[in-house]
Length: 365
Image 1 (cartoon, rainbow, N blue to C red):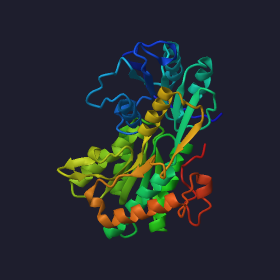
Image 2: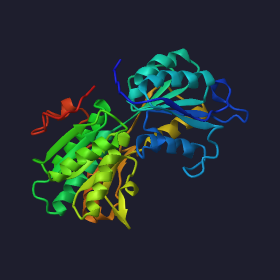
Image 3: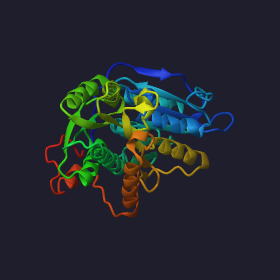
Image 4: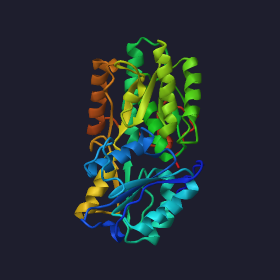
């Protein structure tokens, strides 16, 4: 079993409770759900927020009107990793139509707890190695979407006439999933600028935006043009620093992740420091799993959501991206879907490409 251990801080916060019978039914026969997250919670504006949107959509609610929260669905945020197992057990003891865990840091806890509740349906997103008979696993082709935003960043640098542009990647906790973001991004950049330098930094935390902000400032000050962060709430620090500098007239960019973070980068009317975002439709995973529970087709198998299935994409919302750049990125997207472009998902594979950086901090496990 693969290990993914993250040190996070403090206590478990429970936002209400759902009253429901064992196996997840309630009086009116509707499916119930509980989302379990790490310390960044559903306000991370990224991964967990996307998972929550899928739950809201399933129940016909919205971010502004969560009318069924507390009755049919809810969320528990664990501020420390040692609360993962207790939170899973508490949810298992209550009984839900579906218990949802977000991110590979939950894998070990779920592997321990799920066998104790054989009649309970579980979903884990971003993991494909918890092979248990009551666990659905959904993974994404993050390397494909990251390739696309890498192409966009490199083309924008060319359009801006930047000589020898440099780029940065900020990761949360090293591991196979985040490596897909990083190596895809580098491959995308180098498909346009074969000799471009891409720096990397790992915060080893999903919830410390101050670390990403400090690193982004250092890099921008050293001439880095665009930074892509795949770091959960930590990555919000990159956007904050890019906003400050673009408001001062400096030509630097942040690249969002998981959700379209264009609005998070707004610093003036119609002006965002987020050039584009690698969109990973985690909401598709949570809504799909809930629908499968509802119609009785829940399967304990691995589902892969990629570009061709609509699970992965990029944002073209920022008008400063430009029509020519968008056209070129769309062409690359079509080539990925057709198979003409093969984006390699692991560092071991990517290192076999001519000139690919051999000293990145990426890890394949």
